Length: 539
Image (cartoon, rainbow, N blue to C red; front, side, top):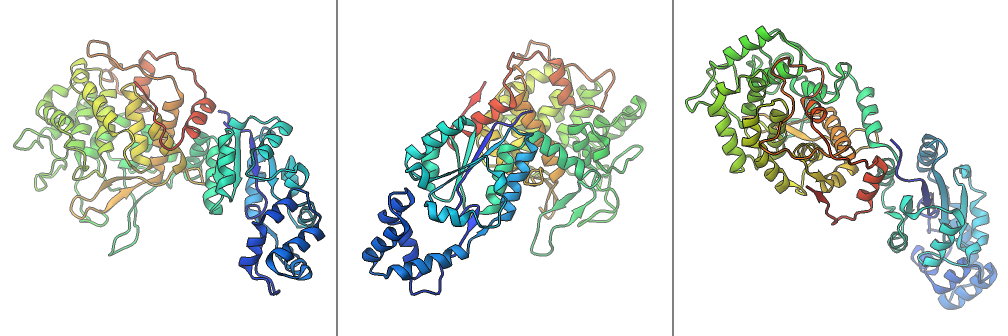
């Protein structure tokens, strides 16, 4: 997949080169900066004044001796140092582009000062060309300077990133169609550049491969303890389902009933019971003998509460129930054509969906998106027309209500995946998700579930990244049209559950798509240039 940007333009001073206004002269740092913002200095930067004439005129305006001014600027020049880390990043991005990325410098700098700057130790080879105000006779933020650069380079403004420490310069660049970044923090800008220039899907997959077998879950920090690494099966199963890559995960398989924890319970009782949630997920993700699956489902039916709702644990001493656990149990039963045996559970799930009971999360799951995501997974797992007619139109309404709501990377990814499943093109949440990709290619951690008693949250960067990749892929693929209650839903897994691939993938494969052929470049470029308040929901 190709990158959407083909050119970078960087300011020099206070971006790629740092300097200090503190000198050993009588001229204070504040006065030195005031000189740099004076009309006289602007004329000097445009090449309209010689260095000597500039110092003489500035001396009159600020009541300073020209020799003292000259000495102050000599010391300021001596302090100039290149930002080697940022220059190395530019070199890396340029190398990764296979010659497709051009890099330019555009600076408000006089000819004498530029001659001094070129003597500084720095990798000037990263630039295809350097544009200075001294040669151009124009300076930023004047539009004429920008137009000169665009004309001389032949760049497409819509495919160009401009980085400058002055917001007024960035505004002018944006007004001409460039993507502007205000340089405030080097790490923030480096992350933004990687996200804008790199392919998010490739970078995400590289992160998963580099951390294969170590994509462990962690808790959030509390007053009593720091983050704790958890060895648990649930997130590993979901990563496997999302990626179809067994080498990425570390599973402790169980011959029959599955436990959330891979060993002893952590931050809870050590002898933690097996649960219907993890067991249901495992039996739909992993290939299992049909006879064994039926036997496990028979045992599950022994754990039904007084309301006819299936419970969470294989332990009658823990009569807990949770709507998302119910959804996952329904996914198992429907995937084997036995959904009719949990009708009271299904009816309650429908009531939870209809009445938005999930908006504050559930006992074991942190966000409303978890409920919507697993509900879409239930539908993708089954070809039952009555089930689709019962839940899918309502699911579409509920996810559409959530579009644009605040959420972490996992919640956003889940929302995009569900939107795609019901036939909504959700560019709003994709625009929020893309900048959350970190420099290492993975996405920021998202909180998925929590301890029922303590409320301690649990997240997994591997899972967040795997689902974020699915979300970006969904937005760059042809849109799945929403199916009517009378249309044929996705192919059923009843006859032969094949967990080697995601059930959502199977639904995508089996469903006729719209003839949408937008490339990653087109999709992401529209998002990056859409503006913070731009909305685009396609139904």
